[in-house]
Image 1 (tube, rainbow, N blue to C red):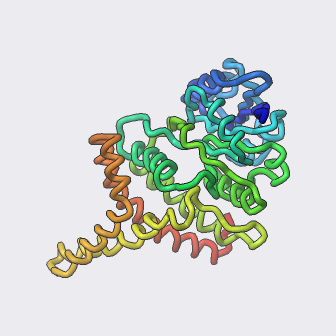
Image 2: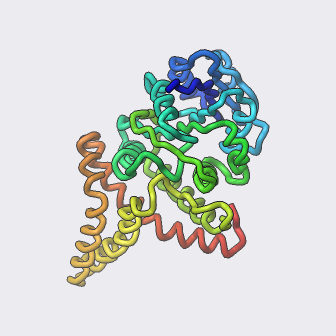
Image 3: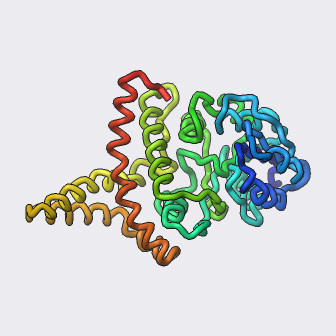
Length: 336
């Protein structure tokens, strides 16, 4: 059987990405072939991103959509000529051989192809390691099977005609939050298939302090809750994660168990002996779902990985408050 010949249009949305765009574009250019094209969509940058990208040989166009990732990606897709559009974030570095691996996934049968985060992370801080390695672990260990129900637009390819048919990303969704989940749900509910390419590991250059990470997680969780409430039955099953519901059980169980752990510790410190039992029960339930991640984090990150393990607890503690905040916001009339 003759292999499918594909022209790929790489779309990189960028807002003040001057610190990372050169490394990102250089890595992408190494893999381009034939009539492939590299498009950078400048989303109102003020740091010279557009000039830098043009100097690196990219076709630079201004975003014509609403401010934010969704509008910039839609602008790039509208200007693309390839049969497939590959969306790459301006802080995501493609590995050597990225195009060959992408083509292998396409030729196995897919309407979309999703890369994964690299097991390597930048910096030496625990928060950055936690966020990036947690994604890597989830993509490569927790998620089973060849196809997924969500997508992450840090490195996501889709058939251009299908993207256009589905109306692209919802530009009403602010920032970079759940516009990818919303799009994936529409794609999958229409019979499309998103293949996960676990051998396509992308290095994420974004760094987080602990405070930045907690703020990011809060915004994402609230956005997911609002997304679930505003959806209707015409868009199929919702997508809030690349993992399926059963694969998310460790997270859901941990989000509940962290509260008896915290309450038990407070009660035990106050001299109420049964509090220690409640704390131990909560810890055991969390460990049941996260021990594999903890072991892998320490094995891959050493002391940094060990430090990152402790971030699991405040991260899980955000889930229920964010859910309640999202519910109250929805009842108050907030849609996005």
